[in-house]
Image (cartoon, rainbow, N blue to C red; front, side, top):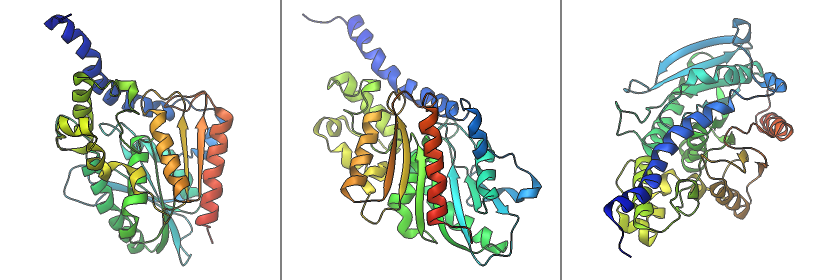
Length: 329
């Protein structure tokens, strides 16, 4: 039976609204990770104090308004070498700020690491050209500047870890797996939570992209084009060649046997970043025999808020791996 224009519109709306829902929910879901926390999490959230060392904010690394980083230098400035931990903020690629991670960065600094939070150009009305690809390129440009600033201040860096939450986790993985070969110092560890690592439409069923209809294929065009920053023809969605086009921002596709040790956490009930996509990351790490630990939170969504014992185990594992791969000596 032939559908009326009104019926077609009704069918199309939920899929197209899925794109908007992703952008809104990704930012909101990411924020919840840092709001809904048990009491023990305070062990990993340290308020900044001058007793910890020196904090310098908004150091420039490029010409863009957002191209700024904060540098946390530990009190002990007499060591011959230091490990650097870069932690990238969440916010769905459209919101967020490095200042939101002050307590995490302060905790890292309290452990004796040089720590840095980096802002990147967000995709918004003022910057519609921004994308995951341009953001990842900004992070790649920023890190040598971070290392140089630390060394100029008298903190020679000999190795680093890169990490983040949600959108920041995606950017951290891209740097760790795609760009580590260009890093000014060896990338020896990466960790994070709930960051999208690949973009197969069949995985993104939360947003209706798996339906194999004209409407769902056009929705995939809209979402994936926005993420990549260039228009993907619908024909590539239909024939599957979009997967190769998305490779520059698909961290899982860059995993090799040389990838750094990895600790990640994902929620089985994540309605923002589909859990199915994280399984491709796990498979890539397994196939390449990377030293990794994958924490599945079986009762949680994007905020990882319903598995307190596993969440704590994940954070303890992060700390153990920091001590293992970047011992403070």
